[in-house]
Length: 127
Image (cartoon, rainbow, N blue to C red; front, side, top):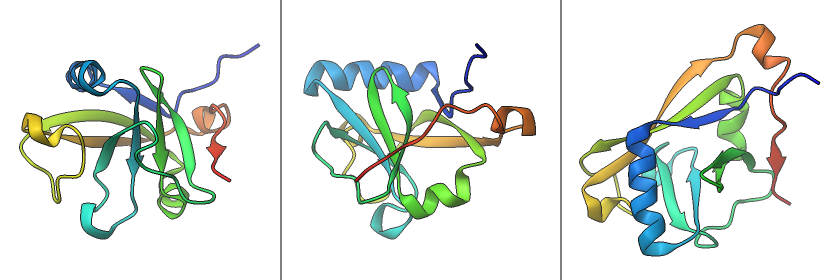
């Protein structure tokens, strides 16, 4: 059986912030919106603190925490691998849990190769 290609990964810096947030809040979730007040910056919430819309896509987990993407944004980025990273500073708005730490999550993208795209992990859709 061939190993499926992950759609999502995280940098060590992002994992350090996630561990800090886990210690403070427990189970987490991520959501990447398609626009509006937070732009396309990934947001981190306590698990259940945000409800994905119908047909949004869960592309994987980071440390066991679901990473959801707006359904329309996913259609544009379904050919891309997401790497969750973090940077110093405040993103727009400030709804995400890392904001009080003076950090902002961000995503780096790269296109899948044709071979990778044919062997991706499945996406879960919200109902």
